[in-house]
Length: 456
Image (cartoon, rainbow, N blue to C red; front, side):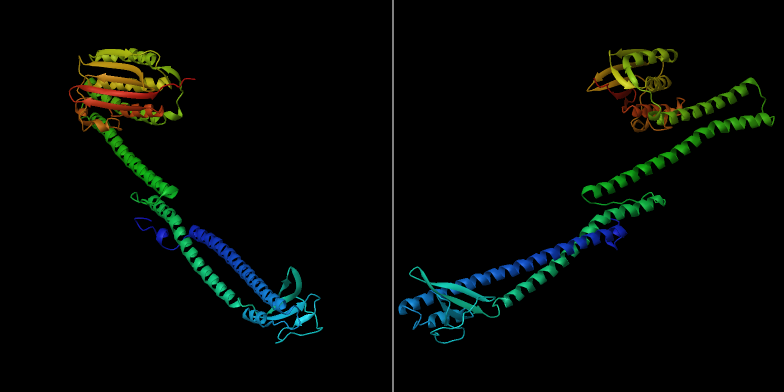
């Protein structure tokens, strides 16, 4: 069941396994007992029916032989009942013959007919009677008295086989119950074992169960969750290291400059204070960007969505960002379709699109151009921000939305590497996606997809 040999899966059963096995055993015992009882009753009834049928047929043959003897003699006196007596003896019974008035003609055990009056014989247990009919008229009755049933041996054999079959069925059912119990509890035990190991700090612990149905899905869901938690933990550790690195640089410069001024190694002139002020501003920007990223990651908790026309929104964003884009020497163009309506928070979308434009202003060179377009296609609203800047290297492209990622461009442009991470979080909070395509030397295209407002 498990690739890592889960203890519960192949070893001793746990509490759940024992309860399941007890339930299976109880059901098995009741089922086998019911089937055995039904088989015994059915077998007994069948043998009794067969025995009675045989006795009835034997009585009918004896009655026919007695009728023949009566016909030959014309009366019971002098009738030769030897053939009838032989048939009765062959059936394992003693023969008695009565005339039409109920008088004994041949008593059980007698070798010759009894002539005259005799005691009447009443049919009881073990006695089978049949009328002797001659020319359509009943002239008497034959009675066959049977001793010990001839089928008692057959009954014993049948019951012996039923008992053996019941024991075999019980053993097979118990084995199947144990196998099914282990199949059911094995994946659960493996997931439990992996969960405890994972909680104890073993981040590589996985259930690794290959099973069909809901148990396999449970184990796979746990493994997926463990992978996601591990990735999140690694990302958290990297983020802490990156934040420490980003904060250390301006803090170190600020501390060194202040110590020089404090120790009299440098004069607190305007130039020196301006350098220290720039480091303080850089530190403030990093802290502000981190606060902005934290707010973006919890944006789904603070969204105030309403009906928004993206064309109108993008026009306002361009108006607000145009001074900075113009100051960077960029040509700004737009292609805005009409009535592209989404259900979203306009302030958060304004922030996301504004970050994309700020990113273009930071990395593009003078006389580059920026194009913003809005359209609806395939049931989605699409916003594209296209620039003709230097582009993004292929090895950096998969990481542009990662926190604090600046790639090789950090040497020529300032920034904390948080702006695009904020964009991704804000768009994801609106159930949308943002992607980047770039070709070095030919610019970059950022594409936002948002679900269109559903028509009422």
